[in-house]
Length: 196
Image (cartoon, rainbow, N blue to C red):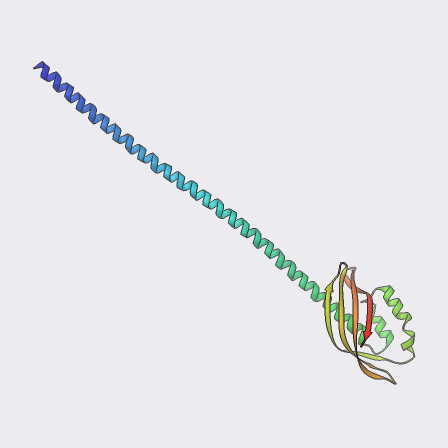
């Protein structure tokens, strides 16, 4: 009987040992599954971080492009404002050259638009028209604009009516002006007129 009891205890011990082993094996398996889930979460987070980095780089790239585009637009706007100012200056010069009732008035108005050496040469050429009273009026103009290193240049196709005691006519001519910047304003350095 002792033999049966010892066999029974042995079997029971083996059953308990198997149950205990099975329990710990099951827990180890559950922990492996839990570790695997956590590894998947970590991998998912790493992938998310990679995607966010790519999105950040894309955003920075487009943000940089957007900044460059904005700078280009701002520069184009400022350039267009400068061109409008220059074309207005050209229009003022045309009126200064061709809208006058006498030469003294004309030369006084031109002081603000032409360089001093050009004005001096115009004063020397004035003697011809001092002998008779000449009135001039700008009837219309069409301008061709180009930028130069130191300023800008215009070629103007103009219609001018000229009246004197003995003469009255509408003349079409080309007026070419070279402007350079001088103390913040553009002044004519060269002018050339061709009647056709």
